[in-house]
Length: 299
Image 1 (cartoon, rainbow, N blue to C red):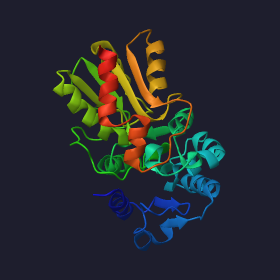
Image 2: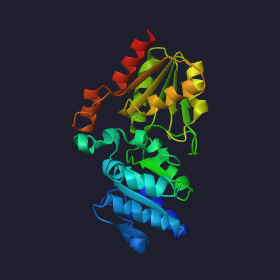
Image 3: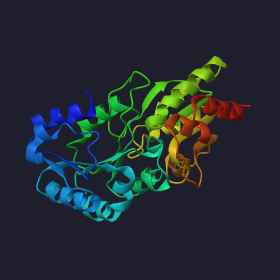
Image 4: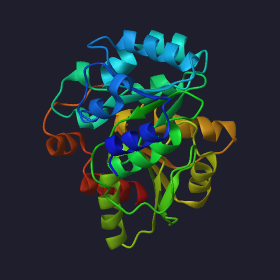
């Protein structure tokens, strides 16, 4: 079942679901005939959308809002903070083309600091599905969950068979190993799977962990990886600051641990616009490039 089909299914079971968009219908264009007045397009007015969603949530509804990730997170940040996070309202915010999925766009349209901004907000959850299947699984659980959540939209097909059902705050360990643990969220799981195959061909045992939710974070999965593996890799299409690497560093300090951690992220610059495969190659995020970085770190 696709994300759109899942929303339709939820809406048929609950009249409290409201689907909203700021003129970004790519993932939900077939819903208006089914939802009627419960589908609201505010136009290019992200702040208005979040304010309206907060008002609807105060009246017992469960709004799911949609906009391009950059405009949703940055343009409407004050509204998300003041109207949604502070009062802890059950508004879900789905950001389109986040991270490298904004491939051909320039810096103004690249959401690569979104996780950092959203996870700093009290009460806010963050969900970064690895594929369309996981997105649909997650929204079933999150749609009427009584807390706000930022969601990175991901329409890409699943690169693996998911071994565990979606649970809030629970990572998915896809393979076990003690040479290297690859911690990853979102679209880059696809490249992590490729890197894993290359590393295993070189005789390395690989623990692959699909983080799923940077907040609430699965502390046990990360701490076990640090304690049990020679090398821990954080892989993300996000700035180095504030994302998964920062989360791991914070956890290690909290628990007074040290670890051998290799971050693979963007450092202090936006990525070069191009088609997705070219972006990955230019920025060093292909499966082979990831595997080569890991092998170098293990020697």
